[in-house]
Amino acid sequence: MAAVIVDARNLLCPMPVIRTQDAVVKLQPGDSIKVLCTDPGVLHDIPAWCRVHGHEISNIEEHEHEITITVRVGQSG
Amino acid sequence: MTRQAKAVALISGGLDSLLAARVVMEQGVHVEGINFYTGFCIEGHTHAIRKKDRQRPKRNNALWSAEQLGIRLHIVDIIEEYQDVVINPKHGYGSNLNPCLDCKVFMVNKAREWIDANGFDFIITGEVIGQRPMSQRKDTLPVIARDSGAGERLVRPLCARNLPATLPEKEGWLDRERLYGFNGRSRKPQMALAKAFGFEDYAQPAGGCCFLTDKQYSLKLADLWRTRGRREYDLDDIMLLKVGRHLRPRAHFKIIVGREEGENRFLEGYRKRFISMIPTSHTGPLVLIDGEVGPGDIELAARLTARFSQGRDAALVTVEVRQTDGMTQSLDVIPVPSEEIPGDWYV
Image (cartoon, rainbow over all chains, first blue to last red; front, side, top):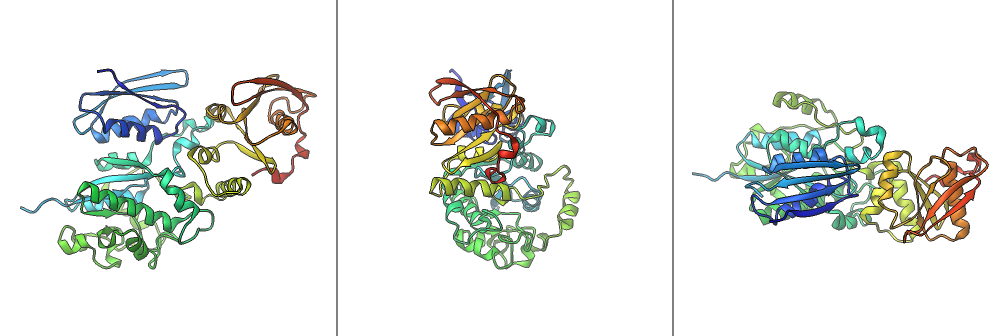
């Protein structure tokens, strides 16, 4: 299944976290979600949110001022 | 076997809510956190828009608290519903546009809805009698419990022994003797408790956790309402009030001037919503124009843009003006001398 994409560009934290959270609720354990962001705060916050909810960061890519974080949904998703 | 009681703790990211949750967890209650995002929350990241602030550690303190506690944290976007709290506070404002008492009632009410929907038993807050002048007084704490509808399901573990017993104490889910009786503005009891729990590096916001307690921010919001002729806002409005210099040279428009690279980059994201300007002959800021403008206004805004560029002392500065549809034009303008910018143009 292709990863769900959440566009959180130009949003400041915690909005990218909230968008991620709202998307993950609709997914099943094992699904993936790609979050497109521009706020560098996501490099800390989305991994922190994943840790407290039992999800996994499978990839982080940074290209110029854009950050793409791939989250794999854990059992609590 | 009795079931484990379940509570949701309002987690702001500050010390008091961290401690309050921990005190209840110590008694074997299952605790999860909830954090409400109003749009006015002071986040390290908002400051970190500015490049010079990027060396500061960036973290969401509510998430940090949840990690320290080992609990789940539900972050809830209440931006839209919260407008009514800011615009029509039943209990009025504090010293600025901060509707602290209505805010607390609103958040506890949202938490009450959440526990009802999720099968939780009670709500925890980090409130302490006398800690804050508006929302944390002996006479206002009962108002929050009553107006939120939470009633006896609202527990303030840090000052519970100064208050009537709540439902969790009556049900035996919480031992009142293991709750606390803090009061007043002193932070020493909280700091001692933090030390006892082994919490270090917790957030200690000097001016609270909300931009509405900030005088300059409140003045900008009041200006926005006054000049639009109506008290309303959206998320972009309130984010932009946190960024850049704001100058209102005419009643019908203002300019937002990026102060450095990080702010310029942030303002870039709004070029499809606002007419924007940037000097092309000299290094300078990205400027947004908020309002309905005519040709004379555009020229004035361009001259102000030139004033904040490296060409402020040049005879002419070329400024690119970009419409919201992407159409551009170049203007050669004379920078406004600083002495010709009245102080009251600065919002």
